[in-house]
Image (tube, rainbow over all chains, first blue to last red; front, side, top):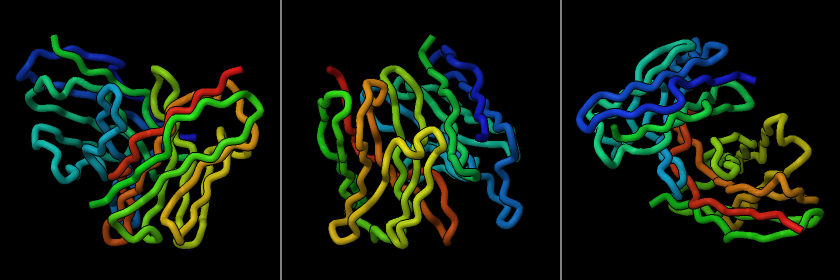
Length: 113
Length: 122
């Protein structure tokens, strides 16, 4: 199975400051045919299902605030929250869908400092 | 509006069978894969498998192969996850989710059910 490793496991950021979460896959998830990275980011708040934020590594899902952005290619990816808001407190997961079984990272908990 | 509505919480005993459902609406059911994700209490997300209602193609995680069965009834646009013999370790929240598709290329899970809590205890 492809292992997705997120870092850090948790981080505390002041309101308005930048939060950065990294995700590393054990194999490349870049599809050479269409040049898309099959890497998505999700946000999960307590008691709620996950919410898709970013797909194909850098495409923002409709309705997601533009303070959320994704970057990276191949095996190394980053989710950035440019200016942390109180409502961004959540656990964030990366996920690869290039290989079966699809796999998630272990999650990164984001809190307010 | 795309919606995935899951069946309610279940309390079962070890050894019992169970089938939970995920009713889809607001889109063409046969055009999108539906996946199932487990979340054990206080833990992360685990991908269980995925089903394509268009041709019933099914893929399982090796961790769940043989432990669960994923299926769907196209006539009522409903996907299912079932167990033939539950264990206490199956206690978890289970989510169904639609895998997005753009120009024939799949991407993340863009719509999720609300989750179904399964508790297995003697």
